[in-house]
Each structure stands twice: as structure tokens, then as C-alpha cells.
Length: 239
Image (cartoon, rainbow, N blue to C red):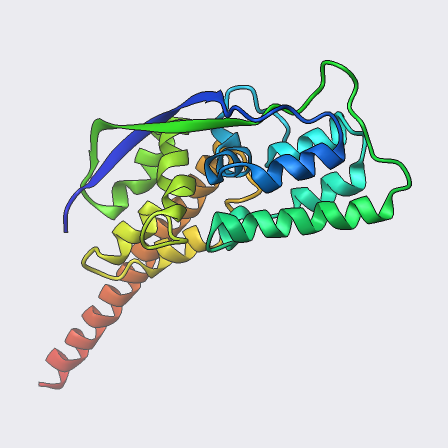
């Protein structure tokens, strides 16, 4: 099996060219018209954005709804969206618009942001590069992840879920193709809810889960070897 190549990445963020939004109606209209890259940035790339620091929500629309529009109900609904569950950006867009339309039908007055607190629509290019570091064996995975930057965690966990195979992180893909039984490791990764964790939390959860999985695998191997030894001893005595 080939070595795991550790990559890192950063975002080059720029204005999308769309007018800013100052109220919920304008937010709805801009989301309806924006490019998929804009939608992807505000839903998926926020953990890597240096200015994003709102642990309660993982997308910019939810954050703006709470802190600039003062609409916590809408913020909660938008904050529950897992963008990685949608096969395409258009389906994510449709779900987002449905939530906003429902809210527009409920309120008696359209929420507005104060001057200077408009929503600016951005997009980004992800620049990925090879760190030169390699993981040669799955038992090295937890220690290697512990040394990774936020950019590496984002690239191999979150951004990876948009690549083939869709919905799977790079660590799981590598383990699945590695010789041997690594089900303990795969189960540890599957148990983590990546969507609603910060990058540092994802790193910590991965390291803890994989460390326990490695220990469990060693314990299982030792138990198996002990049973095999006892069986050989029994056979020798019988003969």
C-alpha cells in the first residue's frame, strides 16, 4: 500500500461581485443568484477562514442571522444544515432558500442589519500543497494527525468529502486500501461528527479515537497470540 501523503492548504478569499445584503429578503435573493463557489465558501470553507470564530454555528449565514439580524430562530435552522449531506450545491441552495422562505412567511417585519453590518458575499480558491511528510503505517496515524496544521485537517477531512469517493475523508480511504484489518481505526473515525466541530476539535477527536483504536488492536492481537500459544501447548502435550 502506498504511503499517505500529508497535504496542507490555505484559502485565497476575494469578493464575489454580488451586492451585499442588508436584510433577510436581500439575503434570500443573493443566495438564489450566487455561484456555487460562493455558497460553498460560506457553508464549507468557514472553519479555515481566519476571521471565523463562532463555535455555535458552522456557516456564515447562520452567524449573520443571529448577530446582525437578531433572528435566533432563523440562525438555529440555518445552523442545523449539514452541507455535506447534499449531493450538489444546487440541492443545498434549495434547502437553504426553503428555510429562509419559511421564515419570511412567519415574521411580520423583515429583519434588517444595522449600517456597517451588511452581509458580504465572498468566494475562495483553495491552494493545496505537499508538506513532504508521509505516513507509512496506520499505527503512525494518530501521532501524525496530532502534528497536522488546521489546513491539513481541513484538506484531509472536510474538503476531502467533496472529492471521490464522495462523503469519505482521506484517512478512511487510505485505511480501507491498506493491507490488514483496520476496522477499529475506521470505526473510530466514523464515530466523529465532523460537521459541527472546529478543526482543532476534529484533530483532538481523531487523535483520541485512533489512539484508543490502536490500543484495542494491540490488545486483540495479544489475546489472539495468547490463545494460539495455549492451543499449541495443548497439542504438544497431547502428542
